[in-house]
Image 1 (cartoon, rainbow, N blue to C red):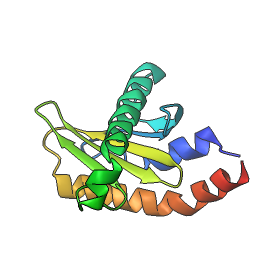
Image 2: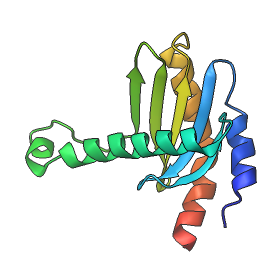
Image 3: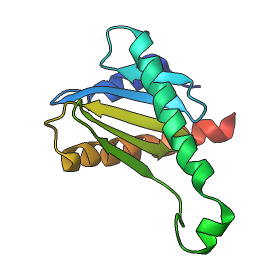
Length: 132
């Protein structure tokens, strides 16, 4: 069973230092845990956006593009850079993890934090996914 408070505490460990928020969600966009928001409304919006972006990429991978080498392999991370900030989405077990940062945070730092967090959460979330 997932303990939202414990997950939020883990997510809070990477939130800060320019990382404004961290969200754990299902691939359907349901919010599981978050850190860095005053209320859950913004977290739900980020979760919906992340799920939509991830799903759009997965749907664009048609058999013909995979056969031609375009889009081959599994997607494991999406990085977006804009004037308003940066966003990174990564798969962890059967869920998605999303981080939002200020514009001045380097993509390498954001990726390193995401890699560390997904590595830490991979096995516990995989076990929960298999158990349900």
